[in-house]
Length: 416
Picture (tube, rainbow, N blue to C red):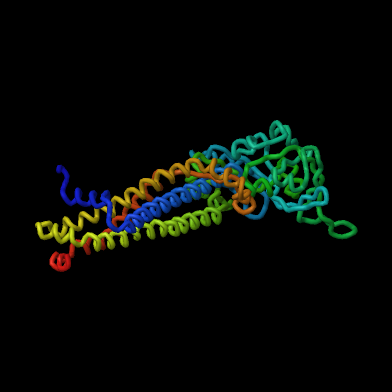
């Protein structure tokens, strides 16, 4: 026997057929419970991480990484702001924009929307909208100054029942004074294209037009709402925004995408943390089933423990024997849970469509902003879950093992 005898006896207890099969059943339940909890933790955490990553990619693809706006009045000297901001080593693109809230009316339907006026030749420097176009060749073709063309989000176009070539009435919140009183300012635009980001927030509420047309519509003259910036590293957007404040001066306000969408990411972070805590309870309950398993086993093996003690086995050896059994349950449960969790998280794009055949759509894009279940499996998360599961299993074995080590040989053998 080349291994230490406490390890040998502990493994033998695990493999041997016990008189009480109920103990074996509880051990199996503990392993399955730990495996299920670890699987759920890895899968849900991966989905939440994927949701956060997907939202970040789509938001920064449709909106600006950072913006520079003037206080109150339209920005007239936008070119000087562009020249100053591009001097920053982390600013890789800049373009002016015009933005405002309008009402769109077509076919007896109306809805509010955000209008964004752009310079087509500069827009590709700050956003990915040119890659998301449908039914049109390019921004330059779809948006010509003075032609009053508009590109609608896919869901917005569906809601209004519009296709390229149709007309849509654009009404601004500002009214014009006429001899008959205040009349809302409106203009008929032609739908020249559709874009699809795959994020409901933009596809349902955004309309793109040429900056010159939007400036006329919103009565901004030759001014712009501000300058949009593209950064080399979106994760450093708050730091870069603070650095740009000194370059553009105190007459302008500099913001970044994390501030503009702070509520989304705070909500996702909170949900991710709460889900991790709640699902950890599954692992904890399964791990502490080990306590009842080992307590019954200690009771079942009282005579064996007493014989080992009378032959000179120290309490530490007895304690180690039962630590081996509890640890083995934790290792097996964690191992199978990690395998199942990694497999499920890696194939979530196959599993969810299969489930949707029976339950219908899992994600409502109006609530979650995306229409597909994302997954971002991170090995750091897998390791963290595995360590937590194993640690809980080891902690659960301490009390039964300590109780076994304190067994009195005389009392245990009194009725044998």
